[in-house]
Image 1 (spheres, rainbow, N blue to C red):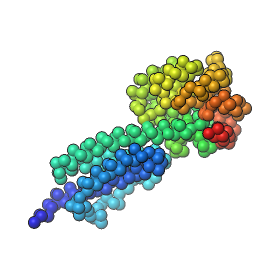
Image 2 (image 1 turned 120 degrees about the horizontal axis):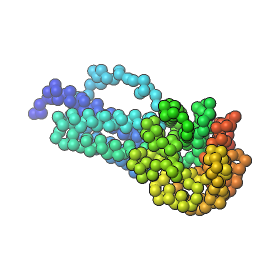
Image 3 (image 1 turned 180 degrees about the vertical axis):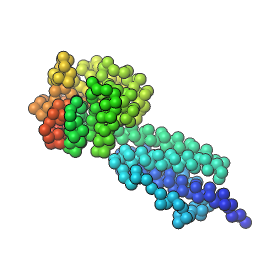
Image 4 (image 1 turned 120 degrees about the vertical axis):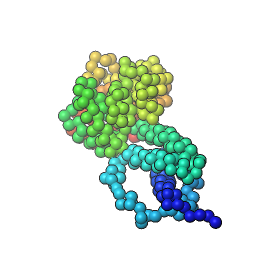
Length: 345
């Protein structure tokens, strides 16, 4: 005859039941994005395997201890649980939910079965790896889909301009400001990152790896004289994006060899943003179009008047500064650029 669980065992079972549900639900939410949002069978398969492994521990004995009407936690909530601003925040919230639940299962599972704590610990580390791989994949997929790249310059109405461009369909923004106090840069970077994530766009920091880490940016863009790519990668990890400016074939090949996720190609035309720097010209654009297999953005003096010339040279992606920052109608300007660039897809 099987003896009834003691009050302590009953409490442990309730804790295990609640956290098994929580972990499996969170994994299912993540799995649905991997399956339908990313169309990635490998990542969705990892989620499914973890759910099934957790299900094997969710025995009838544990389920029988469930007491939903008597659970005081069912009425508890937090304002942050009531809304999700974008897919990144949704995924982050559910990864946190799964990881926290697995940590609870790891500890209380030791009181239930000698192997449960060990199994949940292994699963928790698998989830950490899954998070890195998924977030990195999500960022890189969006990078490949981005054809217009806005690089900021100082402007009194910078945030309004940026939001207008995002409303027009912009999916890639770089915060570039060479002369400003770090506290000012930090505040502006945080506001721009929030805007980008609200609209589902990537947010890149120019030059400053430390600032990119401080504001949890999606990546960093490095010039030829900036930090070595290997050091930046070590600091940023594999899931964030690193871009490199290039002006000639040698720099292009060097950036690819170093592991850049994308490159800037230019300046195509002379521009005040790079005062005194000779234009790389359309010939370099043609060369890159024939020899570069990673995403690349033609940059430097590109506007509505010369966009077709740049596209005819082989560019499918362009980066702009003044064409949007100084535009009277950034939303319409963004839509125009995108409509032209999407013609060649």
